[in-house]
Image (cartoon, rainbow over the protein chains, first blue to last red):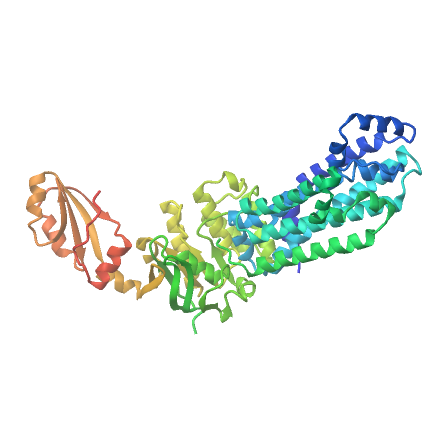
Length: 266
Length: 302
């Protein structure tokens, strides 16, 4: 149920932006990982104290765990490793369906002997695989770089859980953006919801992290299903994985269904 | 059984927009012209035939296959030229042709090369930079390159220069010769009278008439502007036994139905600097065919 020609075309028109995101994420990984030093950890804590606590918490820079994986979970998986792929997913999801419909070029795809479901599945597969690619590269390069910088310091299982959890979170968020891209016939509305909902969720997460008074907000954001600190300890990870995956399946399926049924004024 | 069968097809967009209770059949080997003013429902009909939209009522089929449910199957032997050409961005023409060939699982490029030569199209450049006419040629190549049995063409000659319009007419006639079934829309009668055997007229979403082109041509009123050297000559001429629509200084607009001889005879008595034929609007074409309101229509002059 996939079309190789279309997949190749989608890849060719999307790999540059994918590369940019991967490079930026790797750069940040190296910068952040490079700041880790068990000995100077106390100095880091002092530095943190000079900044407003709420601000640091809002951006997910919690430090509870002094292990290397714990350090990464706070400083990398709290913001960079979540927000950057999310932006990639929003841009790509919008491009995959809504833009083709908005510009009318979907008419050409549908004038070939390919069912709509095949076209939409091929596009969904690209988003899923490219997002997976980001985390595979971050995981592999991150692991190699860590071994080079701090041999034996990185808990591989914890690091794997962090990446799998973040990836499944992206599947769920990407599902929302992809659904939006399938529902709306113009990129304006597709982006309004495809970007608005995930960004809204992230703002709610920041608020719920920032203060105890707003902690209840955590029940209203999908980001609560990926808690980097808990990924390191492994506590409740399996359940989070299952729920995120269920979200992804529901949104992708709904998007595909809507696209197959809807009228295309092209 | 027709190749294209449309039966009481209805798709309403509200406020009278859409198509309503449309029924028609196009036989194998026939070139059918679908005429109507802008917004009459031509593109909506083609979208329904392409399976892009679902009908509110009625049904349409191509080769006995349902246009919405079995559209992928239909596309195997169908060529489509959209009314508004919008290719995938950032591709060159060559890349786009190869992409479409890949999407169709096409093996032979013999026909493609023939078409590129016939339309003098060099597809190497970026589509974004191409002129409207060049894009139209690329669209035509993509519609015909897999040698489909059925063709749906939405305003196929828009943007083409007269030379290329003639090439297009030649292409349609040769495909017709080869037994292809062609359904094409237009809002200009002259554009399809050369190629189509039958034409259907759609107005406000309803099919008004289906007629043989030859019949319409024969009974059709033609309009001419005759330009005289002097205004006096124009005034005198307007007394001649021809159907004068209007006199404007030294220009007389004349309507001629059927026999041309009295008109030519009348003109021979005067000094005439020029004569030009006026493209009749669709309304005029059909008004004259159905005989109502004859001669009473205002004619566009110059």
